[in-house]
Image: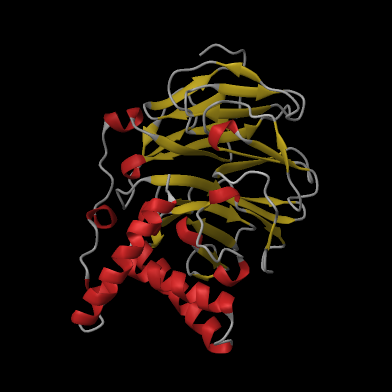
Length: 364
């Protein structure tokens, strides 16, 4: 995760980078060498199954798990066995989302977005951090040209200039497929992009996201009424996709790492210190609930029987059968970094040491 102190350190790098760009005749990040992680495919190895996995998604009945060093694993038997597939980058992957059983996208560090059209068998790089920064900068320049004295436009431009100076170092953290053609992407420091052609091309979307401080947007979720997002320093946004989102007052000022939807209007946000917030009006207002853990809650899933399962940094599974009114703790050892439910009802758990399966009956 990222901190404001890191942002301040990186601000110093922005200044240094701008000076270096001027000395290089304005070439800046475009003149820098491509990072190895963007140029080298992920290594294929049996050891990949024992690494860190940050996201698990369903592609029809197939499970797709993504993690460190560009590793993507597939399972066609509800997580009993996994196989690795080739990936064109070796940067850490954070999240996976599918619009259909075959069409999906993966995002991760260095601004990467990968696309598959065959259920995860093959992947193609459709965006990297250099391109994302350029798109954000182009959007900000256009917005500033339309309203030169507008404070929000000036803040957007300042953030976009920082993206360019950082090069490919800004991670993509969340994807929201609104349809088979329209996808939203969010990341660190207010990174916001959208695509209208299934991820083939992208454009900046920062003007629709009220985030003048450039806070990290860790999670975003489509709801019946639109879109809800959560992030750093208690950031909570809501509204209709395509329109400007509105900031919601947050009862918690620490980082929120994820969202789950229990019903069209009933949402939970979770984050540091076991924080749990609830909204019953599609993200417009939020109330703090009793913390569910003394540790950061990193991931969550709503099972098909409407039980909620959250995973924390100490390895605990936190389960609720009453729509989040109460939770019971199932102790664990390894941090829980990803959660999904397999087609047979099993709970699939991502950890820093691979993927685990808890059978529907509860036996590991």
